[in-house]
Image (cartoon, rainbow, N blue to C red):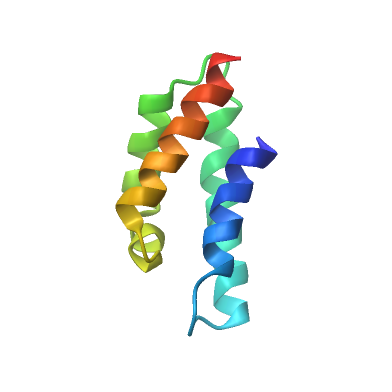
Length: 83
C-alpha cells in the first residue's frame, strides 16, 4: 500500500509551480481514492486503474509524463496485488 502511494508522492514532488497547499490537497485526494480501492477483499489492478483514471484524471494531467507514470503505476500495482 505504501509503495503505491509513494509513486504518486514522488511524482508530486517533481511538480514545479504548484503551491505546497495544493500538493497537500492532491495527496489527500490520492489517498482517499486509493485506500478504499486497495482495502476491498479482492482488489483487481484493472478496476483500480479505471478508478484512478476516472477520479484522479486531473491529477494525472499535472504529471510531466502522464503515460509513463500510468505504465509504472500499473506495473507496480499488478506486482503488489499478485503477492
